[in-house]
Image (cartoon, rainbow, N blue to C red):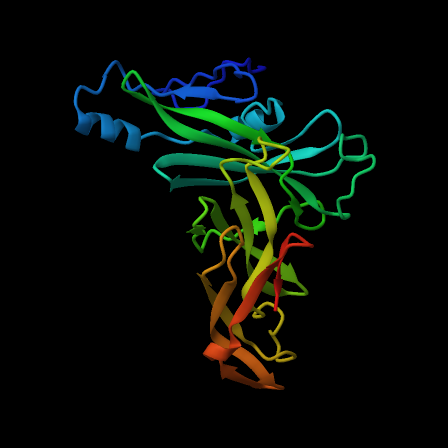
Length: 296
């Protein structure tokens, strides 16, 4: 059944309403109710706000692509593209509470990205919808501030990078009010698992000529590896490592250098490993020309 612009995004105990856009603000309100209770004091009001749940994955897809997948987290749209829910992230910044749902979109043979696209073959486009928590008449809800079908591209074989749920996302607030988000991902190459982080940058003001573009993809950095799937049988020397991110101070308006301290082992020769040391840390700087983080 097709959803209208009034779109249910919560469970049976939650009522969610989407409001129309107001000029260029693109604000969509999502109200939450629990029975008929209304907060009557500050404590109840705070508890109500804290209990606010994010939109469901299928709702995120609807917000970004305006297509109804009938509850599915991935589906094919009529032009041949495949859209999927990728990752959801809640965060606090400058006194506001946000939720962003990230999505991916492959390039179909007849899709809007198929002709004249500059995307690399096999990559997928990253999309997003961002909402801010609001309080209307004592009831907590979401107001949509922006939706964008393209904030960058990544992945391979028409699939996004796989989110590594064994690790937590890392965020870093910049002095100019932006937020750096590192989403843990896992890549595979010839049986070797590469632990990585997809780096995304949030700017509440949006891009200069595209105020709806609150997020931008800033590349994927490596943070360890595990070759256990490829070293079975003794052909390769087994070694595994993990990385811990830290962000170095940066000049106003610049993105910080990212340092990845590695722990574990690395192959030092045929059949030999050694423990990783502080000097083995990986360092990444943001290349303004490539608009990506690059290893030093």
